[in-house]
Length: 151
Image (cartoon, rainbow, N blue to C red; front, side, top):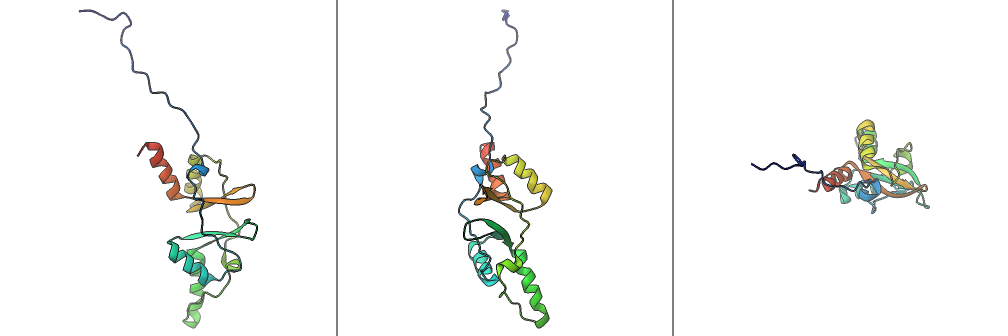
């Protein structure tokens, strides 16, 4: 029996190139956005037509001023129960959330995943130099994980 003088060779782990995966790599860039002066019935029409649950509210310079969601629309519907007629005539500015958590496009995807868990939000607007450049959702993060996993 011949023995190798080098002993047992262990397989070397494959070399990997570590490149941070960022929000900018997976965010949605083409967004349905809303304006503060739009009516709530217009918002509901867009949410239903595009099959989305909410979106950013921007001013004429594309500055983020709020976020409007299905929940905000439902609040107005509930107000109509007193006269047994739901109404959607209010403006977005009256119902949107103005304290908005946002992220930067260079944020690591794992960090935003942790933010989703901690803050229990479904989406974050993505701002660069104060301007809205996209949106990242929980689904976008899951898509990133599948991409990283090689699926």
